[in-house]
Image (tube, rainbow, N blue to C red):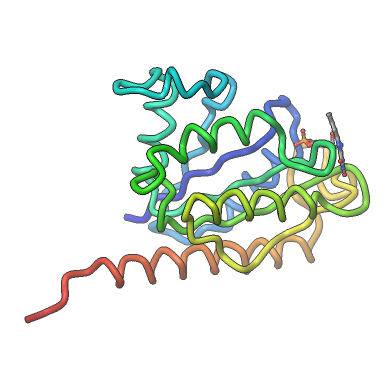
Length: 190
Ligand SMILES: Cc1cc2nc3c(=O)[nH]c(=O)nc-3n(C[C@H](O)[C@H](O)[C@H](O)COP(=O)(O)O)c2cc1C
């Protein structure tokens, strides 16, 4: 069983990024389990003095959720041309200890939605930079969803065919990354 953990960088109830994540989840093939991480708001502000064993409970849960996933899919809003502070804060916690952090070598795919024209492209670029610094395997494909209110219907369902196709490619790239990692970790036959 392959497990994908979804993280929306928005805490907002009707978040377009959370909807985007749900749309991507609905495109996953059979045999792939999807779980959306919902603990972002409970992660305390990063303080190196608190980054000890055992870590704060919310941090332990975050690290466990990441470690249990074969791949991670993050949908990020763009706040002032970057990623939201809550998302960066959670990634800072997740990045420690650096050499054994829960995202190291783990395949991660990035997408993003904004109400403006550019579809959170800067936020996605920033997120990829942060993830690369942590040692995650960031997949190449990306999905910039501009003018987000026009891409979803009243029930929050994705209605844009072109974006759906881009999401399919993103999900496929993520699963290919998962398969590649599995192969690289498989014991070599004698
Ligand atoms: C603090 C803040 C800063 C924002 N900065 C940007 C920005 O730099 N670029 C952009 O395209 N949209 C920006 N927006 C608009 C967001 O794209 C919009 O609020 C979007 O719906 C947020 O994603 P969500 O629907 O998942 O919550 C900003 C919104 C907020 C609240």
